[in-house]
Amino acid sequence: MADSALKSFSRALFLICSSLMLAVSQASSVEAPKAALIKEASVNGVALVYQEQGDGAPVVFIHGCCTDYRAWNAQRQAVAPHYRFIALNMRYFGTAPWPDDGSKYSHQTDVDDIAAFIRGLNAGPVDLVGWSYSGPIVMLVALQHPELVRSLAIHEPGSLTYVTDAATAKAAAEDRMAALGPAIAAAKAGDLAETARLTPIGVNHQPDFWETTTPEIRAMFLDNARTWKAALAAPPQPSLTCDMLKQIKIPVLITVGGETRSYFQVAAEGAAACIPGAQFVTIPGRHLAIAQQPEAFNAALLQFLSKSGSRPKP
Figure 1 (cartoon, rainbow, N blue to C red):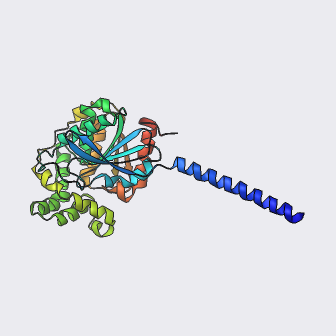
Figure 2 (figure 1 turned 180 degrees about the vertical axis):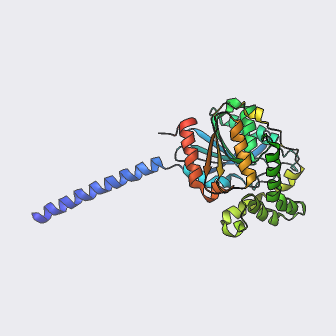
């Protein structure tokens, strides 16, 4: 009799435990975002590749020079559980064949493509995130297409045209040439492998970057070194003035690495000073902090979005 009761109790306990484990498993599967998907969008007559994961309000990420959507991998992991993470490859970037000889490479081409891409999402205004080269591009998207952008977040924008102090701008421009001069020389010589290596070393002001970074990061820079050819032949950046930035009325977050080059420090401070009400946050790291030390940037971005951008999904 005792054995029968014990067996009944054991079966009941097993069923209870199994039910609890199933419930936990089901809850986890609901909360976890679906796997990241690589998609294509037809934009202004070309196919642009993008990565998407999660659901909820769309947050669109635009990469910097000589990279692609892979630059935002650490942000995808942090953002996708709360939002619809979308990272777009601008025209000529990534591993896809170029649609032409690169002659349409320009900031305005990127602005037009990004605006058309956002419009094609048919999801209303988006929270737009930029970095480095794409910093002035996403600012122009917000200025030329204000109906498409709910909020703007930029890590270390790559522009000085809005810096009002001439001496400060001159010193920062010299630091920019110190950062990128070796990579530009390698690109002009046709040595794409050396171009790929020298670009992050220069912008991150880190001689051992190439040896210490991940194989995935090295592959991304190698795949995108070819964009230097088009960049060097492209028209100058549109002149973003401080008066133009004063017309941005949406919430804006500007972040800068505490150990970054003076060029990026000046560019970030200048943008924050011109944009009304812009939040300015210093985080650990340098220009590539989004990949090397992403925790602080992700925390700042998620806090900014929850307060000033779209609300995270429940």
